[in-house]
Amino acid sequence: MALVFSRGWVRDRFRPRLRVHLTPWTLVTFAIVALVLLPVASVLLGIFGESSDTWQHLASTVLATYLGNSAVLALGVGVVTLIMGVGTAWLVATCEFPGRRMLETGLILPLAMPTYIVAYTYAEVLAHAGPVQGVLQIVLDPSTTAALRTGLMSLPGAIFILSLVLYPYVYLITRASFLKQSGGILETSRILGKSGWGSFRQVALPMARPAVVAGVTLVLMEVLNEYGAVKYFGVSTFTTGIFRAWFSLGDTPSAIRLSACLLAFVFFLILVERVQRGRARFDHGSSRFRPVAPFRLKGARGWLATAACAIPVLLGFVVPVAQLLVWAAEVAPQALDRRFLVLAMNSFGLALVSALFAVAAALVIVYSVRLSPTPLLRLASRASSLGYSIPGAVIAVGVLVPFIWLDRRILELLAPLTGSPVGLLLTGTVAALIFAYVVRFLAVALNPLDSGFERICGNLDETSRSLGSPPLRTLRRVNIPLLKGTLLSAGLLVFVDVLKELPLTLILRPFDFDTLATRAFQLAMDEQVAESALPALLIVLVGLLPVILINRLIGQERGGPRGPGPDREEGRPGRPQGTGGGPATGGVPAGAGDLVGAAREGAGGVGTP
Image (cartoon, rainbow, N blue to C red; front, side):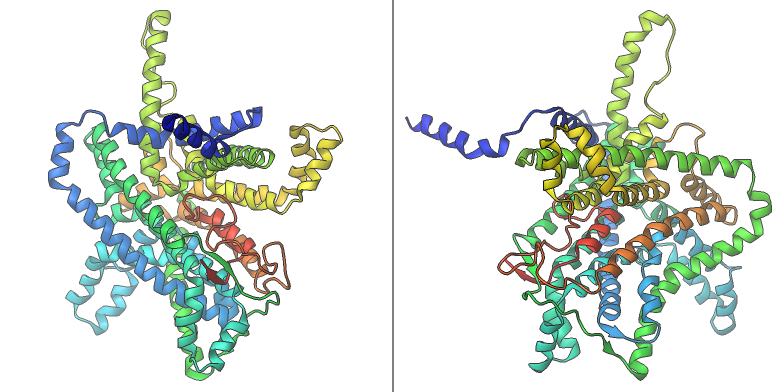
């Protein structure tokens, strides 16, 4: 009897969570999620395969170096971006100083710069024949100036470069949080005797803690995904180790095990972020929201604030772009040829097709959850966001393993029919590359669409269905026209992310197939940095488009809610900070897509567990 009771209790307890309506929409959604999770599953299952002698050698010699360098790199970049992002966000959100409006936008610009481009640009700027060395040698000892470039091409130099490019992730989300905080709370703290620094440290920063942690977590994800900058600087990390095991050593089991180690690192970050956020909900604490009144900084304090916000923009965007423009002017007559046009067509074609597939898959998933919002389907939707949290090199290895296995099975079937060897049909093709892009950047499209559907009244769908329109027709005639802007924004974000992606493209690209990103990196590795300027500039130019879009969306939130809203009613908690208004893996923001969600949904205020 006890056993029967136990089984019945378990069945009754978990049945609501497992219930799902099997419709064509849910079946397609589960198929998409299964495909998205296939690379992760192949990496995890590969751990249980046979190990090789190469893996034993790597584990005993360089594995500790990979782990140590990756940990130090993540810790260093996390601390620096935390200081830079939170400090600049507080200044532009709550203070008035010379140039604030211009710097408010300028602080986002480094987000358009790929890290590997900034890395080799600074390496050449600090070279012996570079402009900086020429000036410094006038006042400093030659050995001291030479040590600058040597110090840059190292682990501390990689921390410096990555921090310059990645701090906008912390700045964007934290700035949105500060803009959403009620001015009355900060004024009350000042009335109670707190100084400006005390109000920031004891009131504003604790309220923004979930947003800050979410931004730093996203930075750490990008650090673990980094390949170009650390490879150029000669820093051994898990990502460079995966490339070495796959290309130089040709050892698939070792590459899989290194990928699994990196995957465990990522899952640990997700778990830490999820635990610290807990069950907290965030609200500004009043039905009458009043934004923070900017505090005017006068005299030297104002100019110090200007310098503090201008230096990251200068170092992270102005200097690299200025050097790229100089190089581009030198090589433009020779570099603007047919090959450059082919590179641009390859890159834009891949990005466009990948964006279309990613947006279409995200639309199916979000609409399926809207039609049947069961816990199991919501869980599947969140699982489909996992790809962005995983480094590109890991996804590439996870895609290659099942594709190689499938190709071998196809060859076994076709060999008796053709009577001659048949080449690989899937591995090393554009199709495999596009599939990997969709797996990696599906979350970037998923989160804006989820936020877009939340702003569409559900009564519209019900009215359409009551008039005899099936779900597909309702989606085509009602939802999609209302989501045109969101669909375009989601597609643009995926387009730019694909354009900049380097490690995944290097591993999966077809033979003799280059993109703007791979060509710029290869030229830099071959010490032809001037020739890499044109493809690099084109990547940066296109990358500025979502940066402008994100800035406009956050600007719309400056005034904050004017009264009680759907999530601001009395006694009703607001949305969690840092979630981006859409499904994310463990609450971790999924790149620019979640930044747009944070901009549109805003970040909360007072946390209440």
